[in-house]
Image (cartoon, rainbow over all chains, first blue to last red; front, side, top):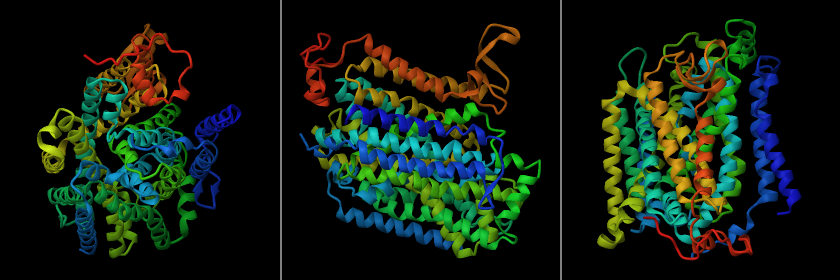
Amino acid sequence: MKPVKTILLTLLVFAVYVLHQDFWNWKRATPLVLGFLPIGLAYHAAYSLLAALTMALLVKFAWPKHLEDAAPK
Amino acid sequence: MTPVLVILAYLALIALVGGMAFRRGRNSTEDFFLANRSVGEMVFFLSIFATNMTAFAILGSSGQAYRQGIGIYGLMASSSGLVIPLTIFLIGTRLWALGKRLGHQTQVAFFRDRWECDAIGTVIFGLSAVMLVPYMIISIMGGGTVLAQVSRVGGAAPLIPYWLGCAIVAVAVTLGVFLGGMRGTVWVNILQTTLFLCFGAVALVTVCHALPGGLSHYMSGLAGDPKTRFLLTREKMPPQAFWSYTLIPLSSIMFPHMAIMCFSARRVTAFKRTVVLYPLAILLIWLPCVFLGVLGVATLGKVADPDGVLLLMLDKYAPAWLAGLLGAGIISAVMGSDAHQVLALSTMFTKDIYQHYGGRERYGERAAVHFARAFIILVTLAAYLIALGLKASQGIFEIAIRYAFSGFAAMAPIMVAALFWKRSTKWGALAAALFTAACLVCFALLQHYGHPGDVIWQIGHGKTALKLLFINPRGEVSFWNGFMTVVPMVLGSAACMIAGSLLTRPPSRATLDKYFSQADLSQEPNPCIPREQTQCA
């Protein structure tokens, strides 16, 4: 994998990890998203979707292809 | 009565699937423990997810949400949704390739070979087994408790008492694993994971449909009441604990049953779908359970046992047959992880102790499978008896598990070093493993005997004193500024691994060549690396 790609993907993972600490939602109960979902819970539900997207990007751009050829020694 | 019948039918179905897998099986350890490394893509995802999800994901999450509010989702679920797939992506795929290439069936076998040392494998085996056993016992306890709760009609005694519930779960798990080994376990996991993935959505829709006034009415009520508003925020959750929890999911890949699952995939491409679907599956289970837990405060008011809030809501708002199916979903979460734990313990004892110390040469391959089956019966029987005898001491097991998660997380640097750091040595790994074991014992004792407010270690005196280790107001051992003990454990273990490795001689070049392809190695031979194979004394 090219170094630039490695750096970009590392930064992406780090950024997603940092986004987990949503201190700005800490004391907020409202607005209720869709009328019933507290903002803090809605944020972390969206975060789970972001985590899935991040993993999809890693699979697309950083998949360890060389491991696919592993054969018994 | 209906929920009990539905659950019993489900358990019978599971035993049947175990029997079918038995007929397909062959008498070799690779087939029994790893299903001949033939687990396909979708089955691999469903199975690895079942391996990781316990009853806590359903009952514990809603119970904690009832007590602490929506923050539980961010604390335990969304961080796992990132960290666990990442570890599977980075570590699981490498473990799979090494298992395929070199024939390893357990992580202990890998560590022994990677660092040319029996002792390091035995130490890690002992530590893993000690941390896994309480987990297994509490799974059986959880199964007995759930069956007793589901079979209770009104205020009467449960149709299935606790002892019988534990026995039913233990027998069903034993039959499935004993007969089917890994193949039976993963087949059963397909049904189990599908059931409990549907559980959350079905429970949420059913309860919402039955609630007069709609969800907005109840959630606005909670937000508007100063006494309950905190449930929709994280104002009572320390940010330090919230961050500390992001290290806990590192434990997942170090669980023996998780690593063994990684060895069982047919192709490495099975990991692709798993890592993408994993966060979505977590969302599907945890979000409705956490939401319903908070909703329980508005709809049920005060309940005696918050961990039973979901069952109470189903009892009140769902028809009996559906409550039974949902109860089966909860039981399946208990049994899915329990079966993998039993199988992992049996695999480790058979491969890492019995075979490693000459059992196969003496008694042959078939005898090893018989040994594994006998071990499964013995270990489940012992777990059942302990679950009965020490029911009153359930809190001790919960403490043990809490620290076991931190302990497995603290062992993650050992795995990372083994896979990615050529210069790592057995002494570094040994130092990290012993550091983890010492921390576990110390913290568990402090938690058990300490009192809220006790300061165990501080630098300086008076108001300017720096408290490094203390018992927080909730009675948990805390590290500087309120961080959880997992933080010093992971950092300390990593430091031990690095220092121990840099101070000692690395493994032989032959071993390094075996684990790191020639293209990855430096062109210049490293003078620190001896050409002859070294052997652990």
